Image 1 (cartoon, rainbow, N blue to C red):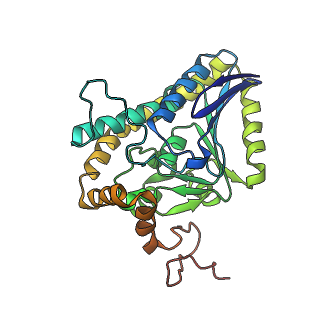
Image 2: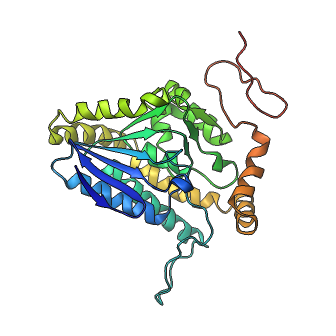
Image 3: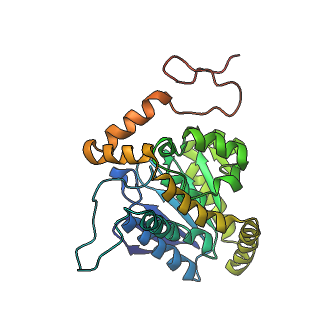
Length: 301
């Protein structure tokens, strides 16, 4: 087994598999630019390593990834005398969103296949990250969705459409509601779900099967599918999604919530945003009966 040292992720190669673990458990693996740039570098390293057949992407601690790091001013760049894009104008905002997405999109552009191992929360930017993977396997009780779309902007990644179709994409993104891993599998958002205690074994078992295949053959079969999706507009839509998110940041709702985050913190802003939505869950099968506080009621027998 070979390992490399990074600050925000763990990277190891063993038995033809590269395992990359988001390693900010106290922050539920929130995506900072520093983390995603380390991830980008590790992915290209795995793609360049002839011993690697596939990549497993997972998160440490209680969550796969709870979203983007919204902490104001976190790890700001040192002043080097160069005037940088501050994100205040729409073009600067779009540039910064594209910078993030370009790193995440390495999962799409690299030749070798990747498997997302999703447990706990996979929210907002976590879904952007997961959906760039080739195969998504979730724990039954995982929590997947984009609640930030209720008032913060638009999804900067639009691979939802290619996984679960236009109606479920609209149902989930228009409300910011989430689905369990089990329901995500029902609508095609992930390949499948399994009980949480079997998740690692399920992912490792599939990765073991991929190690039996010549990496160059894995590449040809991954890339023709991705090229087919590109012919259906997938890559163009990703670029448009970044521009669209920048546009959405100019709405009154988004401006107001980012002011609130700056003055009262992320936690209070998120609690106030989500309170009217109850448990925030969508139900895939059967009616969505809710109590007075918006929580889903058990299905009727």
